[in-house]
Amino acid sequence: MKPLRNLRLEDIDLSDIEFWTAPIEEREGAFATLREEDPVRFFEERIPEGIPIPKGPGYWAVTRHAHILEASRNPEVFCSGKGATSVIDLPAEMNEFFGGMINMDDPRHGKQRRIISRGFTPRSLGRVEADIDRRAAAIVDRVIEKGECDFVTEIAAPLPLEIICDMMGIPESQSEFVFERSNRILGLGDPDYNPIGENPIAAAMTSGAELAALMREMADARRKKPTDDMTSALIHATGDEDVLTDAELASFFVLLVVAGNETTRNAISHGMKALHDHPDQRRIWAADFEGVAETAVEEIVRWASPVIYMRRTATRDTTLGDKTIRAGDKLALWYASANRDEDVFERPFDFDVRRTPNEHVGFGGPGPHFCLGANLARREIRVMFRQIFERLPDLEITGEPERLASNFVHGIKRMPCQFTPGRRAA
Ligand code: HEM
Image (tube, protein in one colour):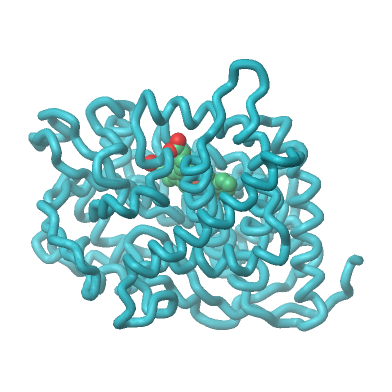
């Protein structure tokens, strides 16, 4: 892919939704210009049509890898707990369901992260591994005889969702409900998920409340009768461990559904598109799947950059690059831009399944908020591609991906594919 440098610095407006629906080459070109000419640049905010909240004071766009690392390593100065991790502040009433630990600072963040980490130990993940293999095989079983399907909704999306449901102990009958509600929350600006005219904040609030209610019901049931799942582990303590309150459990669940679902789905979808567009790389991986898998998975996450940015807020006056940042200023850390930074990556616009080193920030920068699900996501991506390479080896993408209109989630909504029909394994 070749970035298109058709916008001058003054013409770049990261707050314009049209910027995010323009061809990807144009977007990449604009970020290259920002990195080169003004790597910490101030932008006005724009409130998307139909969202009834006041316009904020603007934000600094941080586009270089080195500055993103600097901000991530200094959470006391660049914090997560003020306003939101999106440029637009969350209305106070939304914090009830969306104020999970991603929006917290120490000591609250550390306390919650310690409790929740109990669900992500190598031992807990070991238990999930067999589920990942079984679920991925079943997903391919469901499409293999058809010879064609929608890659996103039928192959990439089900795995992360089913795994989160397995981990939390959510019955299969509820997974469609969880899927639909998480789409509504993350597709905030996209008319496919939130019809024009409907207040998207209200729709997201309703979805958050519905997911929280499901969690409360499950917590109640487990208080009466503990089970062998993460929900039970987070509300029952052993020894002097802390537990999550019902409200914390609910917002954690909303965070998990939102953070763990779409991200992994989009990594798998972008990964498949990249392999389709780079047959040489596909051949390299196919020739030695296990040998190449580790670097290929990292490259897929770098390439996809499913989380485009996360916001921080300055807690005091400081500097970043050549800019003076005032206490209270917002900063958008553009992880997607850092993942193409020419100072860090050789040939950043090449998709290279053997790329080493690969210091991408797809899972966030080094700091307290580094993705808690990174190892789980890596595993899911690897297992899904193993299934594809083994059982759908000639899978081709047959139409242009339909992109999500969002500056936050690098999403693909639909992407048709074809393959030689095969036989179900089970
Ligand atoms: C390819 C897939 C994924 C990507 C690209 C991704 C990306 C990220 C990023 C960029 C952050 C950092 C947020 C920040 O800077 O403030 C993050 C945090 C987080 N992620 Fe992931 N994620 C993925 C998969 C998952 C999965 C599968 C789970 C769990 C099932 C998960 C759970 C979390 C949680 C709980 C946090 C918050 C950590 C904290 O604030 O301490 N993620 N993720």
